[in-house]
Image 1 (spheres, rainbow, N blue to C red):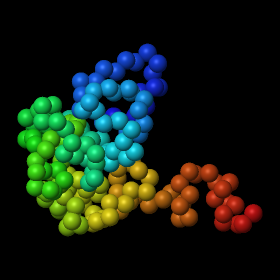
Image 2: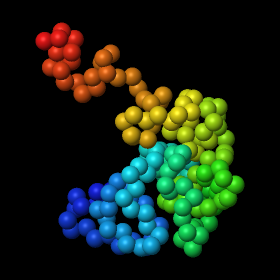
Image 3: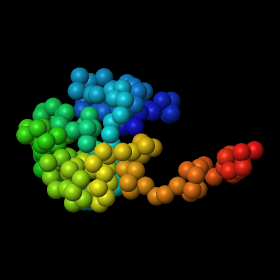
Length: 166
């Protein structure tokens, strides 16, 4: 969960366990199997990864990969992929948290050494998985900036000052 449960003062959250909150601890998940205050959950964007609904993919190094207690593990993920898989490539299959079971030892269609399930840009080689804006989409797959000088805000005042030095 992208951590800001405090935005709705009337909301009450009860944890059944196995949650991951990043960043911070605003949901007050209190079960021993919950992971809270994870600095960077390494989650991909909500996208069609197969199955009947959109899911949030897990990027390489996500705290959600191979970290769920077997007692909380369902037989399949939301897409119908069997659980557990070896999501971190260490040879041991452990369930992932959430609706998406990563298989970081699976196919790698762009040949960059990062399996498609864990690649933030699976059709364009980007072995470093750079994601400078933290949106889960690799820099190699981001559209070019709106302005040639990387001013993406559209604030022409700053752009003009940068171009003219005024």
